[in-house]
Image (cartoon, rainbow, N blue to C red):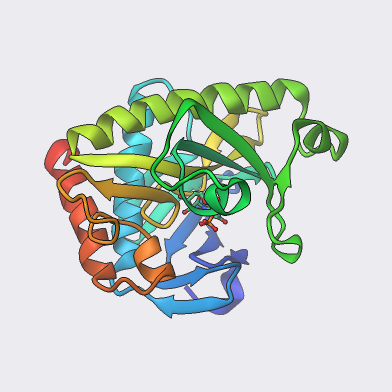
Length: 242
Ligand code: UDP
């Protein structure tokens, strides 16, 4: 896989074309970024962990009726996916207050959010992925009203499935980010990845606010043991689904 063949390189993945124009190969990197790429580093083994974890979670979601871009994993750090046009909206689903929500609203970290908050950000690094209103999103034609409704419905269903599943693993799903895409034949599907890079995951057996963190916040805030945390999430998921 040479540089020449790359279709696209993002912060955590490289996308390669395949012989089939409807199929792309996503290569998951160990590179980690935070704070809109102002902080950069490497999390050893992350590519394989996030790819394997995402594959398990995409299969779980598919089994519950959620359409995804997932096809299969030819290698532990490689995923074959359906070619999609990404909807340039990051969907943030929040069960418990953390991160930017607390900074922007003053809601204390750890507050249970009822009902679950579903928010939309504009996927645009130059602008810093700003929070969108529904009206702005529609005004900018980032999605049609029908697509937006389907995205919200799927996001709430995904939250219910993943909250229950992670709960069985002794992990609280605090919040997470989703991206959706449209396949060549017009189907809306879940895309990107679901991993400790894109979810906040708290170990239910820990009460200490630093010790309980099993996700990229360990890297963002230099909490140490980043690799161990990612490995632990994968081990618990594989123990249930593997
Ligand atoms: N998130 C993500 N990519 C982004 C922004 C957020 O995967 O570009 C995830 C993040 O890991 C967390 C959730 O979305 O699980 C909510 O993040 P938040 O808006 O609180 O932003 P942060 O505090 O991470 O800047």
